[in-house]
Length: 410
Image 1 (cartoon, one colour):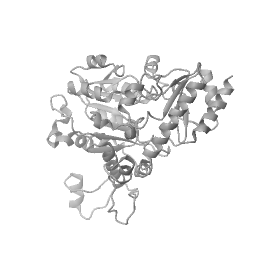
Image 2 (tube, rainbow, N blue to C red):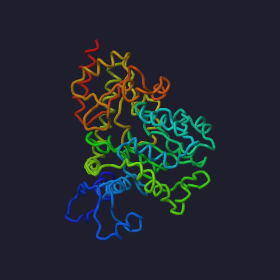
Image 3 (cartoon, one colour):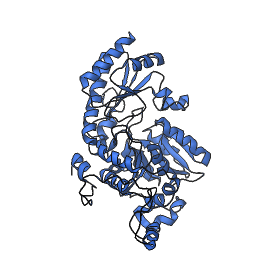
Image 4 (cartoon, rainbow, N blue to C red):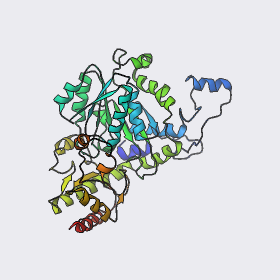
């Protein structure tokens, strides 16, 4: 199936009992079984079925299946947030003394999480994205994974996923990619060698800013070993399902950061229009970026779709159907940035991306607030920077709103 058809039909249960075209919301904490033996069998993973929503739920399960089909993996685990997905994906294979090699151009919340992991003896070594010599030199015997965002938020650098996967696998470690900004519409990173893909479903998958969630998907092709990953030793007999089996039986179940059934339902509604929305949003982002670059020469406009972007060539090679729906601009000072934000009338000032509506934010005082100055600069965050998550409005209305706001700066 092609992309939009697959969104509607892949992984959908067409044998739903009452004929619903969308799996109903099983807003159930625990599930009744016909016998004690059945309940014991489900708890012991010897029988199919559901016992407790923290462990598994029919609505969540269908959403996981649909994402697995979309990403081209062997299985997915849905979580309570995008950050929970990152936490589960990483700590499923990490223990005290281990190290992460990561791109430094990350979302501020991820940087904060990596700082929190230091208390558990897990160190992160930051490298410049696509500086392959530096990346290779940073990998040691303690390194257990390489991490990056396909399109950095808000740096908008585009990761050469193929080359990064090649380096990670050369050293016997998996590549874990946060594909939230690009989505599977622009690139299916598992097809480019990534081993685990993470999405914050709160963004483009949901599309309406009405539910917080996250999901991770395993490609199922990484060759785990007990020597390098002793935490997986008991699960290696399950072959390609070792990683997911350990996660399901351990951290995911015990930490309790499961997705809510209502969220899974809302995400399925959003998922079905992901392709249509991304097509429009990417087009709008490119048109808005070109407009701002041409009309306001004193403003620094950053967007991978612009030929002036140093990430344009990589983006043109690995992204299909657009360059993402985020544009950033630098207007000179923090004061000007705040004034411009307050002068915008059509768009929304809030800390999310991927909504059908255009959203704007000052990253330095919000999502990167707790980062060091160096971390901010590495992530492309400056005091005069504004992040624009472009929506599906008519582009002429967006241009007009920004033009009026810029007029207020004069």
